[in-house]
Amino acid sequence: MRQPRDGAVTGFTKYDKILVSLFVLTLPLINPWVRGDGVGYYAFARSLLIEHRLDFTQDWLRANASFRMGRVDAEGRIRPEERTATGKLDNHFSIGPAILWAPLLIVAHGGVLLYDRAGGKIPSDGYSAPYRTAMAVETALYGFLALLIGFRMARAYVPEHWAFLATLGIWLGSSLPVYMTLNPSWSHAPSAFTVALFFWYWLRTRGSRTWPQWALLGILFGLAMDVYYLNVVLLALPLLESLGVGAAGAKISREGDFKALLGKNAVFAASALIAFAPTLVAKKIIYGSFFNFGYRESWAWNSPALLRVCFSADHGLFSWTPIVLLAVAGMVFLYKYDRQLAICSGAVFVGYLYLVASKRFSKSANSIRLSFRARASPCIPAGCL
Image (cartoon, rainbow, N blue to C red; front, side, top):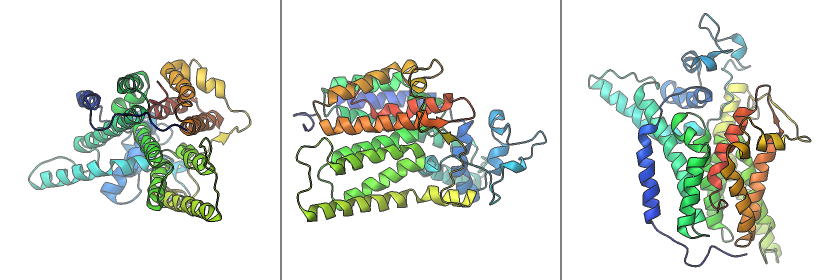
């Protein structure tokens, strides 16, 4: 197993500066609105910040027409079937994006309250411009950080200019920028960030991870799950590493080593559960069960629609985002540089693909394919070379 190439670039270079400059130039393009699936994600942040409870009534009533359809009747009343057994509104969306939006939203709320006390007239309801702008800026930042992390991982294996071009390719040739700027209230860019952060930290600590680092890795995994449930496939990284897949001489030679490895994996699992607790608590409040996530879709484990998800004319992964095909092919070449990284990366990609292809929806599967393309992209710059 080869480690990153000798003389790999470190520090803040001219390519980092170019990427940061490009990101700053794109900030005026952000579209601070909340609509579609974003209503469900943003509702967690707004209800907890403004009302200090999980009451989504105002979010449903003030949502865009397509989201209200089927949820609100012609008289402007929420349909009774929208209520769960606990009396809460059926919000199956994840709470993770709200967790990541919290820092700037809290600042925005404090600023609005101070401004209003000084005689201003900005509504402190979570819907006014300062709140939506704070959310949109954070979303764009998280998407950019995903790209930057991917760039820094890639340049450890290839010349920096190739890593830079690959990062630009993913930035401009995938659907990620749509969710960084045009639809910032959706979970795609926050999910890309949590996946990239977990992947980077796993790679950085691989092979010499201490007990506290195992705990932090578990927290990052739980956070990624909070944002997007299918990020569970990231579990393949520490699992395959612990099994010694692709690593020469990784066999456990002593009983004490084996017990230590089991203990570290237990620490990882416990930390992940703690980080995933916000999701479990929210689902308990909304649905009355920690493990009822509100989804009613069935799964076709024995007949996944792999070809349709990859190559269909209506938003297929590779047919609509061909640069991802190059990225996946790049994992084959990565194998000669870092066998374990190539195997683990491939396993994660196949895991995402299988889960998405196995999911059955009553509606068109376009949205899930779009979701997959955006969330898969930021992890692939290293393979895109």
